[in-house]
Length: 328
Image: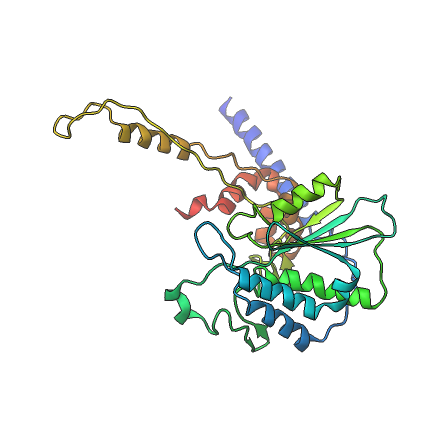
């Protein structure tokens, strides 16, 4: 009897091994070649200086409530007008929620759902104690060693400027999109997005706009970005993590510290916090995130490929690794 059970277990292991190896080998060739899209020719030094000029505008919140530096945003708005003449001549421009910018580029077929391209103009403040760690001052807009340095060069004035550079070039060439395109640039993403992006969303909803695609800043595209994947790669993301704020209230009998009750309000609240921490949202590995990991499989060493090509088996482990729970 025991020998029969052992044979069954070995047979299952053998079949599983064959399936895992076979699936891994199939993932080596199943990827389709990506279509190469010709980019728009640009004058790199000029474009770099445009971004550097935007970086020099210190569009940071002035307090913990996210109040914007009005003068900095006015300066940035004027700089965009001075730099992208055709955009501001051909597209409808609206200031929304205080300092958010919404541009409308009408398409030739208004019956088609539009496209929304997003970015944000605000940046995170720089603590005084960290200034010495910067290779170049964070708001100097230095162009050095092939890079633009400073707050916003990555997050996220680079997105705003890249979109405007592309649209300006296309407009100069007489291009007109089939679908209407909205350019939506918020001004308070780093603190809440309540008065920038949300105000624009509310405005577009009120106008009955139902876009076919909304593209926000997303993740990065860079060399050696993903472990084991050589060359340039990009992170695919369809949403950002949100947050929830809870108010916990405990009622307890008062008493002198020399004769505390068996159960205090502090103890009750502590147990409530522990209970919340012990019940996080469940981990899920599906949709585009799962697809991104599987798309990486053909490009990584065979050992990693076994893991990524068989998420049906390794998914729980990968989920834990991606959540950071194994770092404890």
